Image (cartoon, rainbow, N blue to C red; front, top):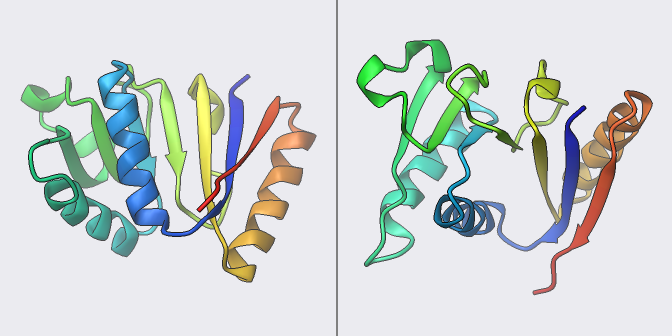
Length: 143
């Protein structure tokens, strides 16, 4: 069963996710980020620009199944249709719902902003993960 971590009160979800991905990449983790297409396009753009002297290797597409064979070792995948089939063990969810097939990952990270709608959606997802028997960690992000 996947371990789930909620990161609450994130002031800027996109910038925080970039830093989270940088940390994961430096630690050697392989990560899939899922969410809405617009969110992933913005994140893709930020990953190219958020740190002037650093690059986080990543790929963005509609579904992981579209990933070209030569890129299967890419450590960070941004896809609305996710899968752990290439050995990625962490799923970062930026979407509104619990990702389908989240249990195929060792770890799921939910990034939750300060917006009331975002927080309410996180409460619903927390309950869904809890009903499924996941161990859940809560992390409060300070400004």
